[in-house]
Length: 276
Image (cartoon, rainbow, N blue to C red):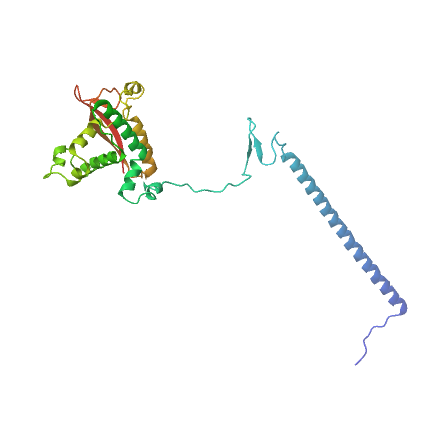
């Protein structure tokens, strides 16, 4: 096999090495120039972008109104408004009253007597006792002074007569041995019951005319206010509630808007009652 390796002289070898070095230097120089050109373009772009951003910020940025700071605005009256609450208050859900007897009433009722005393309080009984005795001493000779126990018994008999639906039944029949009820005869005599019916008062009759100039309900006003104050304390009305009217006949001179004259002697008073 013949040897085809090319042989160079010493001079030719030196010229070839010199030429290769020159070509390598030219290539490095061209790469460096292109890199510098690219860097200059990037610098120019960055400087231009930064300049544009600064100018836009200066144009868009408006001066803050006088008296405001951050996200706050000051009204003409000096009140400062904010976009959000500085302090979050604790949430308390709305409470509604449960319809029916109140907790105050439920915790104080253990029997019939305690339920009765919640509505007919000691103050109401004492008022009736004082005014009834005052009228009795003025109009009845040898008046037997009544007390709170007797007045409570009297009110109980009136309620019991309503339970027996004895509205139109004569008092004599209620105390009769054959047609009456033993409870009435055991509580008090019929004569004393009728006496209390005629002398029972809720105010001083002598001072009533002066008080009636300001209020036509002066005869029962004090008792009515006591009774009305107890109702809201003992019962909460619900959504199923209706208001009805009742006409109560009486004999008196009254010119209030809730009275109607049915004859020359008889008048009726209109009451509104809520029911649930």
